[in-house]
Image (tube, rainbow, N blue to C red; front, top):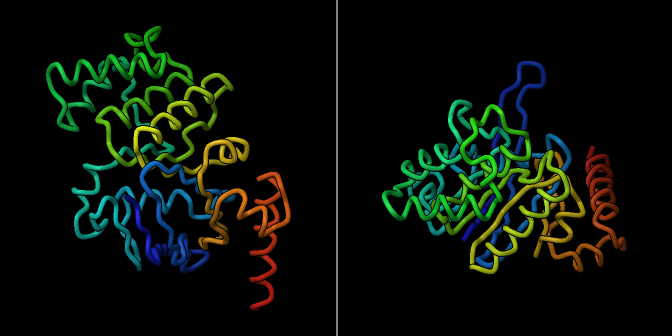
Length: 252
């Protein structure tokens, strides 16, 4: 469902010059798979997700989502994805039901189908207690539930989620995890970034570790354990970052 081939994005910074935010990364994500993208802040995770969501255009390389090229056919890509960004962008004066209705119409849902999907999202993400409250009165966890409900309202086959559990308490994070597992069972392709190692270890079929714009490792937990000799994902992650830094130092 997602195929990334030597994807790269560079920016010009006045102080640092050319910054390679994503440096020729390649991977794929299949249907019925949860693929986790891990990395420290500034590693290139969000840039990668935004490229796949057609918010940014690549400097080099290519990618396809559901067979549609992210540069040549961005509208076809957008029709197939639900994209959750770090900036939730929820209108403050609307209620959750109004937000869902608005975004549902933007995605072509109308009438009874739209009403049914809104009801499903309200139930799935336990929104009913605040469904008619203005969103500027909601907590971070409530807003995140709404943001994810909005992202998946139109039932897209591909989910691209940037830190979906960021800032959430344990019960709300578990609710999001359970949704992702059910989405995988239903056949969806899920690509998400996270800093929560326990979450990634629990959810992911495969994991990619990004550091300084490069993909340093990719594999299942068993494959990453074999490569590093570590067991916990936290230790695997730290070991891989150290490998990356040593390798760069050796080339200088």
